[in-house]
Length: 89
Image (cartoon, one colour):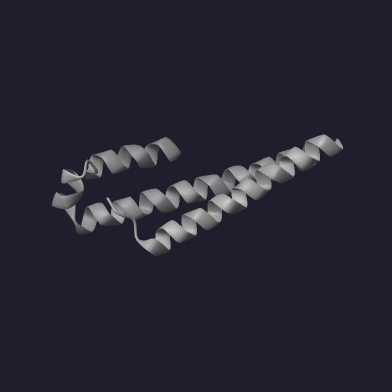
């Protein structure tokens, strides 16, 4: 299944943001920052990563609904995309 370019661009942007947040957590640990501050940053990174995953699955779901035969032939039948969604939930 080919993802639309705008979806790929959005997911990549989200992943770059997550990478920056994780680097920020590493710096915070090196600096001995407060636990609550580190946890807040980890929570933000986790949320951003989840959002990237949901965006990816939503795009796959839309493709499955619009092109059920092609999606199934590509190994992305609706039930498979549903399983992917449940992994994120």
